[in-house]
Every structure is written in structure tokens, then in C-alpha cells.
Length: 164
Length: 422
Image 1 (tube, rainbow over the protein chains, first blue to last red):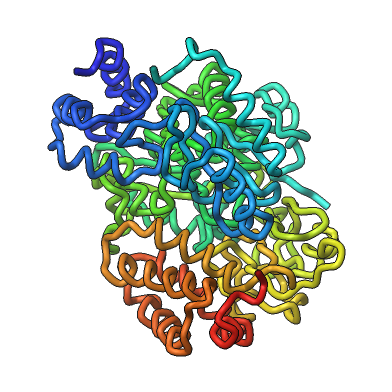
Image 2 (cartoon, each protein chain N blue to C red):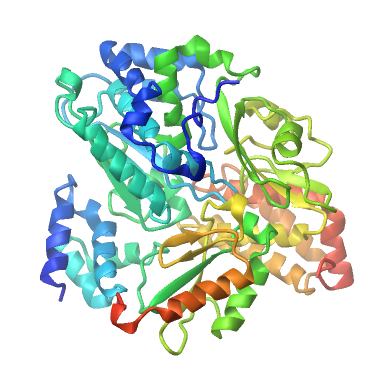
């Protein structure tokens, strides 16, 4: 069941739409922002609120890169693997992250702290290679810089887990 | 040399507030537009010769003129395409972060020119700084009476909404974008009807790129003749050019339309990084044909780049150096396009992953002579007219030109049964 807060935020969003279904991607992100990912149950709840079928809403949820249909780690690290970053060292950076975190692209570490994903061009082409860490773009990322980012994430107290 | 689009952008792209924007002449173009009628605004933009900066280069004023203006009631929409995800592009991000008011003013003028009452900025969610700057700028503009009800006492209302998309290259395709706004998968729509006649929710809709609309306030304020005088080429105005790859000084510069590749890469980007040679380049983002290192005198305007065998596209150049494997570079491009294909039409959904698999095999030393023929075939099978939208034809542009320009490198991968660059 969606929480009261989630339902309220979706209702507020609906005020800016001529037709309910126009709010579907916002509704999915409202759910994800509050619980970290979008479950099948949440998909049906959103479908009911927006007067859409479950299949339509899931078709949209699975279409977007930034909607997670399964749980992700506390921190999501996305590696830009598009052409400018490829030329400036993306492969070495990806390799470094895979080894350091002990996961393949698309996987979450056993401690649930990190999910590693590829992402298309982040618009940081003149400052590659680039990462998106918990929704913020980080540029000119060397392997050392990547280690610092990982260390900083690890230091964050567990109590602050946003997606707990 | 005037740089109207970027003159006010600060280092680090800190937020340019409305006071700073207005003291540099901001919102004067809007005042001029509102003092004229919508028809005059359209004519001014047609006369300026502005062509779309999103890649296709369609004349902007002409696009607007297709909107039926007889008052039948119901909404008309303007949608700003700020879903920049073409690999190698990065120019709209500069304008969004550095001067949000300029885009908002351009959007309001455009809405006035087609009597729209709702405008959207369709922004990719990854551009978080841009989102924060736009939210602030929309609030400031509303407070000043440039947005909302009865704008500057004209009796005209405009609501501007910021839509944060959840990430997919296909949302940048004009009709895919409209489907996304309607809460559908961003698959392309048949044309005709064109969005100007039947767009968002079946209503007349203009979709324009961020850089295109950022030009509009200046055209209104300074006039079409001034705008044309900015350029020495047949295409009017300035353009944001960019260079990425292994050059000394990668970045973005606002230059007159028609600047040469040599000037952009060697004067502004400082030339190749130490010890490296230029082998080729994509002149306008990922979906444009490679040009060779011998074509540096090509002028970066729509017709000159087309004559040289490629497209101006987004005007952001990606450079290939002699220490980078061209096959690997093309693999990176095709992997992107294969992943981003929306799956709506079969040639794109099946063909692009096939090209990516063949290129991957070449890189792993498992490629065969015949694979090069299959890659050639795909360039024809995914050519314009064979797929539903322009994504797949764009995807095979760098592939077809790479197969020609870097033939020896492709063959070496087959012959040596490995990537010679590894």
C-alpha cells in the first residue's frame, strides 16, 4: 500500500496535468524517492490512482533508466559509457569499480551498500570520464577519485539510510 | 565578437538571477514581442533565418507558422526539448545551468507567437543543477509577472511546467517526447499529422531545442538583420560548438555559424593532447558520419557539413585520436544506440543489437571477414525510410563512415584475431 504521504504527493502532482496518466512518471518517482525502488504492488496502486492498467504503468516503469523495478543498494553509482567517456578512459574506470566493489554492472554489493549501473551520456563530455553518484554528476573521475567517493559513501552513518 | 547566448554565463555556471539577467537586457525581447502581435513575432523569427539547434536544422519560424491559429478553443502547447542525451553533446546543459532565464524568456516569446497557454520544459532528471536553476528562475519570472495570469497586463496567461524525465534517449525524439508527456512509452508517432497540428493530447504543439529557444530573446531585442550579421555563413547567428576527446582543452565555445573545424579544434580546443594525432571526428554528436583528419577546412554550418558527407547535428565534435581504437569507439556508439532503441520497429530493435554484437566480437578477436559485410548490410537496412524514426538511421551514420574511413583497422581486427590497440 502506498503511504498517505505518497498519495498526497501524487494528488498534488495531478493538479498540473490535464489528464491523469500524464503524471505517471512523476508518480513512479514519488514512490521511488520514498522507498528506494518501485515494487509490483506500488505499480498496481499507481495504476489505480491514475486510471491506467497495471501493464501500462509497468511498461512505463521498465522503459525508464532511472526507475528501479528491483531493490538497489544504499548508494547507486552509474558509469557513463558513452563515446566521449569511452575515449577518455571509461573502460579502465569501469574495470576499477567492478574490482573495487566486487560486482558486475547491474549488481548490488552483498552488504547492500552499492549498486553499479551503466548510464548513457551525462553531458559531461568535455570532463570525462563521468559518474552519477546518488543522482549527482561527478566529472573527471580518476580511479583514485572513485576510491574517495566509495570511502565517503561507506562513512555515512547507517541511520541516515534514505531507502531503509 | 558578440556572444549573445553565453556572454552572461558565469564561471562554474552559478545561478544567474533575474536582476543580473535584466540588467544585461533580459526580458526586453519579451516586452517587444508583447507589444507586437503574434504574427509579427513569427515573421521576425522567420526573417532571422534561425534554424533548429537540436540536430535537424529545420527553420524555426517556419515550424511555428504551421500551427493553425484560428481560435477553436482548447490548449496550445510549447515544449522545450531539454532531454539532451546524444553522446558527445553537452551544450544545452551549459545554457540550462548558466542562463535559465534566457531559455525561459525564449519559451514565453515562443508561446506568445502561437498563442499557447501551457509550456513544458522537458528536462532529463540527471541534470540536477539545471533543474534547481530552472525552478528558481521560474519562481522569479512568475513573481515579476512574466509568467502566470495576465502577463504584463496583456490579458494573456501562460503556465510553465518543469517536467523531469526519468531517462531515455528516445524521449528526445519529438513525437516520442510527446508520448512520454502523455504518460506513454516514448515510442515515435507517425507523421503526419505533425505536432504543430496535432501534438500533445492531440492539440497544436511546438517542440523546440534549448539552444534554439535561447536565441529567441536576442532576435526579438536586436532584430533579424543583427542576428544574420553575426554569421559569415549562409546560416544565421552563433552556435555553441564543443570538442570532447583527447584534445588539450576540451570544452564549449560560442562562435559564428560557419567557423571551421580547424579553428574549433586547434584554436579553441588547443589541438590534440601531447603525442597524439587526429585521425577523424564526429562533427555533430554520436549520430553523425565521421569526417577525416583531412577535412579540417570544412565550415561548421548546415550545408557545408552536409556537402562534406556528414551533418552539423548538434555542433559538438568528438575527436578520434591515433591511440584509440576506431572499432572500439564505434562499438561504444552502437552499444548506446542498441540500448536506447525503444523497440517499436523491428529493424532498429533487432538490427542495432546485432551490429553491437558483431563489433564486440571484432574487439574480442572473434570477428570474421563476413562480419564486415553484415555490418555494411545493416547500414543499408537501417537507412532513412526503413525504420519508424530517425534513431536507427542516425545510429548507422558513424558506422557506415567508420567502415569506409578506418577500413584497415576493421580488417586488422579480423586478420590478427585481436584488437591491435589492446
